[in-house]
Image (tube, rainbow, N blue to C red; front, side):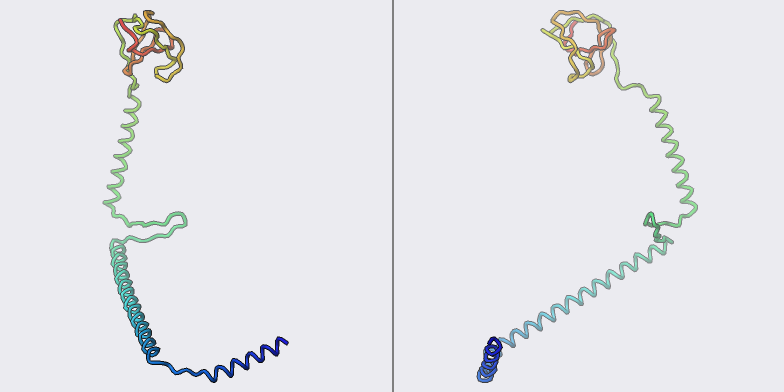
Length: 190
């Protein structure tokens, strides 16, 4: 049944196509001509761009040739190692001598720096005070385990308490005599 319907349908289409011959109008011919001319312009523009690209490629090739000539003129050789890819140079004897002199100078400077570091005195300077006894001048003073404001508070001393100070550092922290305790300098008075 499907076969018969498809056969009848195809015969119908053949008959209809023979009877519907349409002549092209002038408008259709004009539109075809405009479209074809536009297509030709696009082809010309593309051709011009490809010519420009070719000229740019030629310029780049000439620059590459100049660079390669400079490399070979100075006897530089490109080397491909499995570990490193880089440029190696053929070095004159004068340059080798200069490099060895520079290496010697660098090693000498390193030795001098190491000697200076060994002879350097500690950065923290201790200012020894003539008067060893001080009083706490505020209502209460925090005595700390180390000379830092964020250090652990070991003890709190009330106003008027006498303390013996061994030394005060340049940061304003005083070490109590014969103990590992520190107090801020501005909390003390003579």
